[in-house]
Image 1: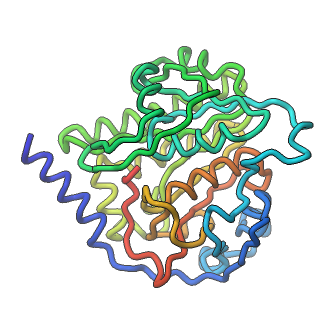
Image 2 (image 1 turned 180 degrees about the horizontal axis):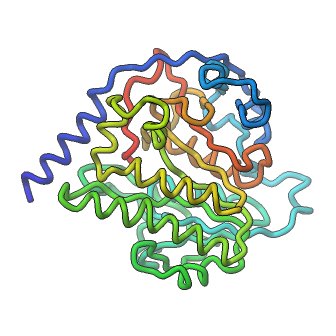
Image 3 (image 1 turned 120 degrees about the horizontal axis):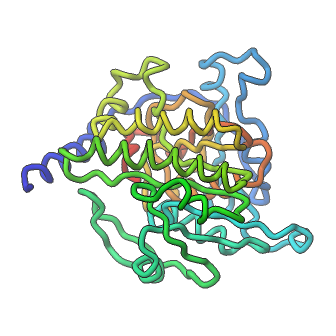
Length: 338
């Protein structure tokens, strides 16, 4: 067991430190402090619509927002005069106790006319963990977890690994939207393949089937950049090889992505770079599908994009690849730090 843990820690260390900076050209757009959520997707590259942009065009037309998350109006997180007229909506967050999921919860809970359901494996443990700040060990990673005011958030039991589609459908019935922020936790190297397949592939597909059966209108899936790396010549890149060494997780995520795309549901697939627990230190970069092969991003920004994607029509049926625009450019990629 000690050798297995040591191997996992070594792989994670390689993923965090061994990747060299991969230069990304982009044209930038400075967002004003009052930018709306619609501005997030106002000029995102879309080669499917105009038929004229190549992958290189998409990459060079990357959108950069250079203000920090606190000043990005990515979603209506506070009440406005128009909010009172908005109908009540219900959003379920699967993977709500994860570091990204709990940030999504926090933002949704502050929105008016929004009922929030945290779908968790153990409601009793989740109630306690969400209300307390702590330092936890997730696989081989030590992470600081902030507390969350869970008042007004309903907890429901949901385990994507063991629950049936019918059981999950019951949890989702009555919901308008679903945010999928589940992901296996790297641990024992001998069991990672099975765990990634169970959670990031089969379990996520069960959530999609249940969402369709329950009449959910919108699904936002948190995935990873380089998920489809094989299709655009990144199979031998350090980022792809090191990340996929963890249970072939990129291949497993790709299956779920394709399943969501073919489901008929309105979707947004959010592909962040390596996830950081600390607040953002740079602006948000949004790029087209299959364009980013390195970079990191604060979970705060990922949560902002997820919440904005729930209601912004410009994110409908889109894949958004996101990183932070840090000085000197992105230096590493570790898409498994979820």
